[in-house]
Length: 107
Length: 126
Image (cartoon, rainbow over all chains, first blue to last red; front, side, top):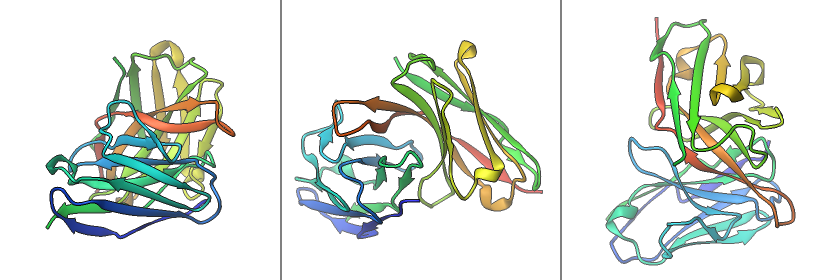
C-alpha cells in the first residue's frame, strides 16, 4: 500500500500567518492527492482534490500544489476558523490511504 | 441535499462481529460516478480507510483488515453495510461513511470523499 507522511505533525501559528503543510507519498502518485480539514468532534471536510483543485465553497486562501511524491497545502492568511487538523489522502491507488495529520493551533 | 448517516451498536464485546449501516440520501448508489467508503478514527488518532464499494459492485478493502471486513450495498434501500469480525478493543473508533465522487478529464479517474456522515463511536469492551 502507498504510505503517506506529513510534516510537521503540529504547528502553532497566529491569525494572518501564511501556513504551509507538506505531504509525501511513498511512491509517485501523479496528482492524485486530496486534502481535508477536520475540527474536533466533526467529520472531515474536503478542501482540495487532484492536488490543486479547490472544492466548491472552500475559501481561496487555501491552495494546493505538487505532483509525484511531494505536495503542499498552503493557507495564505490563517483565520480563526482554520485552527484544525489537516489530512492528505492519496487516490492513485483505490486502496486509499491518509496521512497522519497536521494539527494547526493558536500560537 | 446529500446526506449520509451511520447506524449500528455503540458497544460491542471482544470477538463479536460489528455491523454498521450507512443510509444515504440525495444521490443514488447506482450512480456510476459515485461510491461509498467506510473510514474510521480511533480517539485522538488519524483517519484510516477501511473499504469501499461502487455502483458496479466493485469492492476494495484495507490490506491490513481485509480478512475481517465485508462491504455490501442495497441500492433499493440506499444503504451500504460494513461488517467487521472478531472485534478487539483496538477497534474502538468513530466510524464514518463517506461518498466517493469520481471525476474524469485528468490522466485517469480522480476520486475524493466529498460528503461524510457525522460518524458513530463504537466502543469494544467486555
